[in-house]
Image 1 (cartoon, helix red, strand yellow):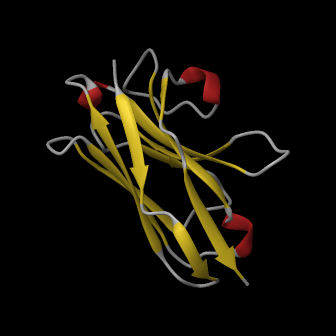
Image 2: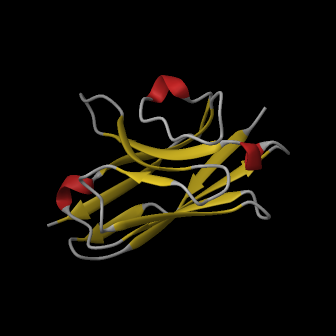
Length: 126
């Protein structure tokens, strides 16, 4: 069992940066892929970025490529999402997700992940 807690959300202006963190409990965290999803009211949860268990394989949605950077520190059981050049369309609740059948791939659909955090709100004003 893995429990995930996100932190770092807030209200910023367009062009600013934020760093989200996802802290995990559980000894098996380092064996799982971790991903960030986001969701706005009335829309489906959207894949943002994911990182495999080793930290060497990452996959970004086109909408954030070149602006967001994901990293992980397995010694600290934490994954980070550095968000730069934020846009108003980045406004959403951001969720950390982990689990799945393999730690060597980065699925992009929510049902591939077993564990979810409670979410953290990111609001970007234009």
